[in-house]
Length: 603
Image 1 (tube, rainbow, N blue to C red):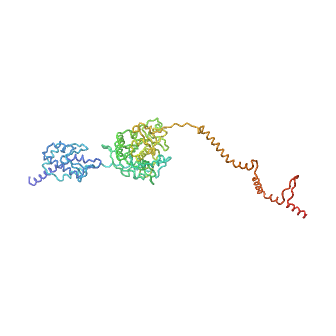
Image 2 (image 1 turned 180 degrees about the vertical axis):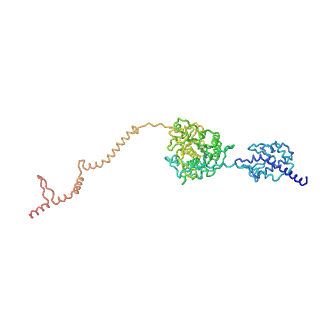
Image 3 (image 1 turned 60 degrees about the vertical axis):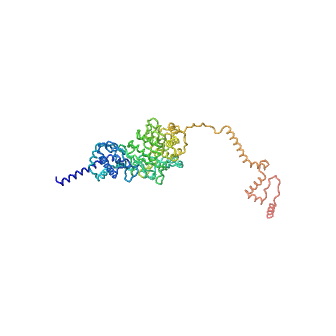
C-alpha cells in the first residue's frame, strides 16, 4: 500500500469516528424532543437554537461519562440521562421555555440534575448504549457542525396539528328583509320588557351559547359577541379539537344566531328585533359537527370552554335523549362554578303527552340537577303541544312562531320550539344578575321560578311554575328558604294559592238601605221646594185667589191691543159699539155726532 492510499484510509477512518458522536447525540436527545418539544395546545415546540444547545449538552455529557470510565451505570442512575425517556443528562438538562416560564434571551431553561417527564412513553433504548457511545466519543474529537444538523430534524418533526376544515357544506338559509309578523303582541310587550329595562338591561353579564355558532356580522349582533371558539370531533385520544371559527363559516344552520339574537340583540335601523337583555354580551362556542353528531367529549369540552370564558349564564338549546357521562360532568362543573345553566326541555311531545296519558322520557342536559329546564308556550300563553312534559320542567317561555335573526349577515326568519324559549329565560337571568350581582346562581334560579306567571292557575308538567316574568324576577322579594328547601318544594314556591270564589252579597244592608231612602226623600223635597217657590209668590200677590192679578190684567190688555191694531183704530173713528137692546144707552161720542150732523146737512 503506497503512502497516498494509506493517508486516504486514515482520513476515512477518522471521518467515521467523528460521525459516531453525532449519532450518539441524536439517540440521547430524542426523548427530550418528544417530552418538551411536543405541542401541548399552546403551539410550544423546540426551536433550532434549543435543539442545537441540547445536542451540545448531550455531547458534553457523553464526554464527561467517558472521562469517568464509561461505566454502564450511567444509563441506570437517575439524572444520568441513560435509557429512560423521562430523564436527561445530569450535566446539562435542557427544557424548552413554556408559556409560564420566565423569559430568557436564549428561549430555553437550563437546569441541573432535573427530570423532565415525557407525555408519552416511547420505547427506551438499551441501557448499554450510553456507555458504548461514551467509549467511542473518548477517542474522537467533537464535530462542530453536528448540532445544527440535528436541530433541523427536530424542528421538522414538531408541527402544530393541521386545522380541521369546518366550512359549510351549503350556504345558510337566507332570511327575509323584514321580521315576519307574529300572532298578537310582540315579545317586548308579552314579557313586559319596557318596564324591566328601566331597572336593568344585562350590563356586565356574559351569556355562554353552546350551539351551531353565532354569525356576528348581523347588524343586530354588532359588538355583542366576544371571542368565539369551535369544537370539532376528531379521532384522537382526546376525541375533540378546539380552534377558532373563520368567516364566513360562522353558523351554517342559523340556530345559534337566532338564540344569540333572542338573548342580546341590539335594536338598530337595520334590525328592529331587540333581545331580552340588550346590554349583555354573548360568548359563542360552536359545535362544528352539529350536536346530534358530536361526541360526548366534544360537547363536554364546549361546555367547559364556555364556562371558563367568564360566562355567568350558560344557554344549552339542545336536548339529548340519553344521559352522557362527559356532558353530565361538564354541567356539574359549571354549576359548582356558580354558572346558571339553562337548557331546553325538547320538542318530542305529542297529543298523548299533552293529555297526560303518554310516556314522557327525560331529556338531557335539561333533566340534570341544578339546571333550569324550559318548556314552550304559544303567544296566547297556552302550552305548546310538542313541548316535553315532566316534573323536571321548571318554567316556560314563548316558543311558537317567534321572529328571530337569520344567519348569513342579515335577514330574519320565524322559528318555534323550546330551543328558542330557553334563551328568553337565560336573558331574564342576565337581567337579574345585572340588577343583583350579589346573588348566586341558585338564588337567581329561585327568583325566576318564584316570580313566573302560572299557566291555568297552577303547576303544569309542560310549563312548570309558569311563564317567565323578567320584571317580576327583578322586583321579587328575597325569600328565607335555602336552596335545598327550594328544590324540594318548588311547586309550593312557584304556584300562587288559589283563593275561594266569594259568595254574592246584597249591595246594601238594612241600615244602609234606610239611610239611602231618607236621603232620596230629602233630596226630592229640596227639588220640589225650589221649583214651587215662584208659584207661591204669585199666589201671595193675588191674595191667594184664583185668577190673575191687576198687573196681570194690564199685561193681558196691552198684549191684546198689540195683536189687534185694526179694531182699536176703528173704535177711535166710530166710537164704541152700540149697547145691546134693553141696556142703558150711552151718549155718542162727539166725533160720532159730528159725523151724523154732516151727513144730515148734505142730504
